[in-house]
Length: 416
Image (cartoon, rainbow, N blue to C red; front, side, top):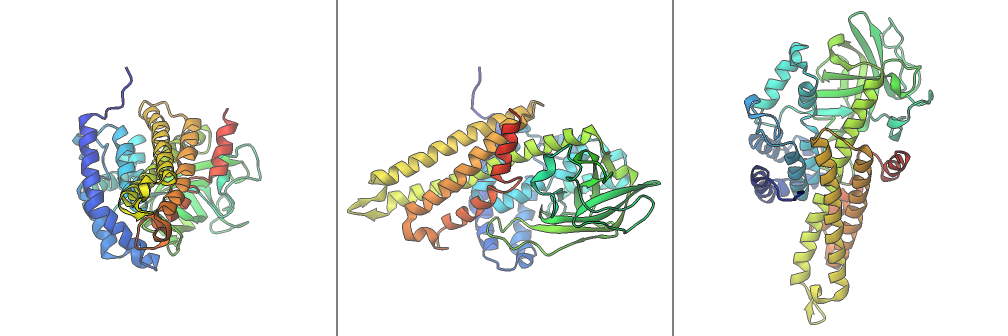
């Protein structure tokens, strides 16, 4: 029979994460959020120390088998822990979400024996207790945002061209194209400023057009270290919310990439991998939203039971009570849908449409809930003395992250 009790090992990990959030991650994120210059924020002692602490706890390797140096938790554990982290700091939670992507791909494709750099990186990542090693996913481009699932249209593909046998020649604006040469590829172009962890990562999962005359199906997938000659990055993005998550442009100027680092050549396998990543990503973004919504709800509930107006606590006013009720039910409903999507992922049966539906429900809910919880606080809600205004700013970004809500909803409808 279906049940919702978490296995003891996951429940224990959840409690440890909750304690870490309360004592360390939440105050660190709050401090990072106030630093005006993003580059100063990501080089601050606070940022470095909270990352180091999270890596010491093994939060970057939750589901890696113990025999390989990880914590050996079931795959579902990462989804449960993500909500806990987001309730304390959605920016740092987002960093920890994307950080393992390179190591995960090395495991998934068995790349450790394909090229020495992969084996070396996998070992360093697992042994890391300073938060030094992490990955990013570079796909979005200035001219290709929500078009990543538009297949079959020749005008929609990654834009920059590098001609076969030549280097550095570009046509068009933005985008990344990889031209095949003997023994490898020449990569030119750029990825937009929305590459999460793009400023900090030391490994990149890169989607680039191998055959520019094709549509999106002409895309190849590369896993490359950021120290290859010709790779550079822009300044980290200065943005409204999720300020503890570094995001930045990545530039590729005649970058030589050996054959072994093309892990998925152009063809049908690319779309299969893309759908898996997007299913996982949208489920995760939804859970980030649940965490933020829960944090705002808990703050507002506590405030409502302490704050008095009209001779009684504001919790005793029916309108306030109904706002809190509505927030609670939206959180529970969103979590249930996301848990189903996460469970299907762990069963090897990813459901892209369900992930889209669950994510849009959660992302809409977090924007609504954080707005309503500010109303519960009244004038205090817009003051930086209280955390709900930060939750509101973070919530807005979660309605855009991994695809705008409108585009994701349309993609779900097209899968019916």
